[in-house]
Image 1 (cartoon, rainbow, N blue to C red):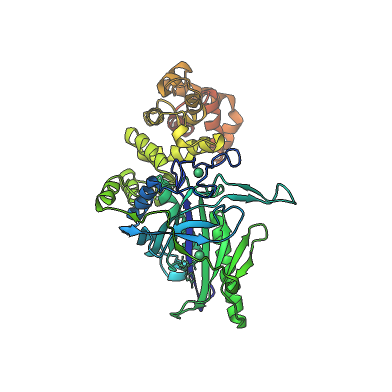
Image 2 (image 1 turned 90 degrees about the horizontal axis):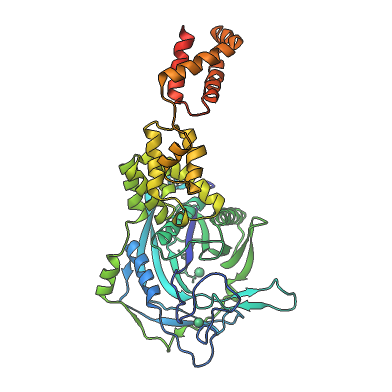
Length: 484
Ligand code: ADP
Ligand code: MG
Ligand code: ZN
């Protein structure tokens, strides 16, 4: 940040809820499928069709509200937000009014030392999270004469999370977005897929002279469909504002779109052209009421939250902050890790999860839930390495792939394939002797001071032992031989 200026950022996040059916009808809620296959008179907006609220969406909103330590409003009302667009068949979106089901929550992120002077945790307010329905999708690319409309997404439940103007840099916005993303995925209320639009973000950005109490004029940047885009767009806007402030240029509140290819934002509409949505209460839906019992019942289903779990993983398994963060990418991933760690060794389990397991998931496009490897099997493999029955290399190169192929348990594979590590001192001494005899010149050079050749000898012995010899023993015995 340029000295003398301060950025003020607030994010609005749209979270698609992982309910089975849509917000106000029984149509399937899911990405993909033939265009308009998942529609009915309600989500097509046919006259006379009546909406019925999906209580599962309410439960999910409550879960988030509780996780954010927010106030849950016992009574809130749905409104109609009117605008005309081909993918909005009713001509209005049903959303919540001035009172939202979730209000005044907060989430804690590390502060950005570049703008705050230290990384102390900062509390970011959540102004509100309200329930609403998604619109359909317009496709302008299929034809240059027509717009095609797919209403499978029309009526899908959304939770819009409005964050307070408490973020002070693009880095903080990024961390905040990550924290909320992790939270909704952890709670199992969203699949978190930004590319498919299940987790979308608009960024409000303004800049003010440092020390000013009043906020500067803000812009709202739309179409930020990746974490990277959010960060880049905010950085871009911050610099643009500062340049204008320095030149004394006046600017107005507006909506801008992020062009990821060009790496810049473009004006879409100014405040003067802002729409009048003619909000009014939705007459076809009763008020949403939530009882204290319902809140308590939901509270009992709240899982251990990511931040608390991160601290526990670090403490219980001796992990770094980074490792714990990576393991917490989803609840299932962290659960799998803990199952392996409890049956083997925490540090090794973390290495396997972030190494071979992650690589396998990436390569196969699978999730940990569908990985065909029981956590107990990975634990057994780690134990075999710990017990020095096999070395780490054999575990990674031979046993792990065989486990994935379903060739049996780790122990069975080691036995069947004869992979057990040779830890027999006598056998290794014989190998060492053979290797030294076969390379007299290298031995002379080594004795003359070429230390690099030690690696060469280790390599030759490992090779002679077909990779199965205990590397520590090889080193030890070689050193002893050289000392003679
Ligand atoms: P709307 O987008 O409907 O106008 P609000 O005025 O409530 O709604 O603002 C929405 C978002 O804009 C919130 O996330 C809030 O934190 C953020 N925001 C409000 N004022 C500013 C500002 N001056 N600079 C940056 N963000 C702001
Ligand atoms: Mg807005
Ligand atoms: Zn429907």
